Image (cartoon, rainbow, N blue to C red; front, side):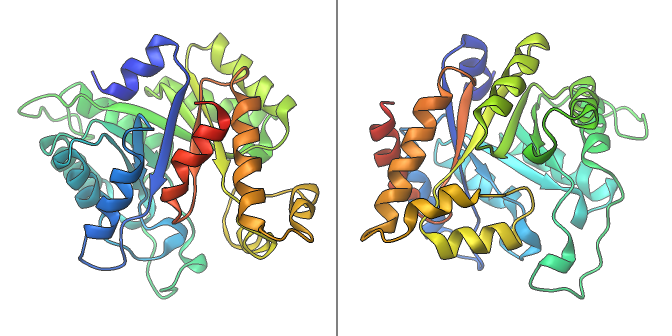
Length: 289
């Protein structure tokens, strides 16, 4: 059993974070960032060419964390691989000791840095979860027997913009049908939405990890609102930075405040600091964790 699964099942408030692999072959900075947070989080998401921007393989970066004794959540996007490649990568991940996975559809290539790339999308994130369920049963996606079963612990991603809508919960139900045991969200700033999401997860015996984003200033907020799918930072939050002598301190305090507010209405938080992993311990200290 992974530590993530154990902590979620225990009922303790769980903290995860995420780190992007490097835009090159040197993993030293990536690993240093992971070491900064490893004692404060249960697991670290390793992003997979997020925003369709090319980076080192999330499989290799996740395997490097395992080697360091740090538990990864391996993100795997359908955008760049057909079902054969997805199965090969998943079997390879399992061979390297990776057990937590977050299947994703993947951001559109048009948003990335190599717009001429051809997207694959052979499977959707839900169908990828069905594929993982097959592997966990010792079968390929084509129902051919494998030489052994995998033992993946599967999570799902949720886009908060549609929370409360019938389609939102239908998508969650599809993912739960194929084994999703926890859900990580992008930032949610409406506590009523968080509470509705939490109640739904409680009823269905799955876990909710709410996204908490470190906003470093108004320019970053505007960029994220324009370029990152699923993120919408409200204007009233952006206004908190107006006239601030140290915008970063405002962002740290606000992230800590969010975590304090979320402790009673979620199973945990997923902290996104976008390159400032060194600030995760301070945010958690200020949140009382």
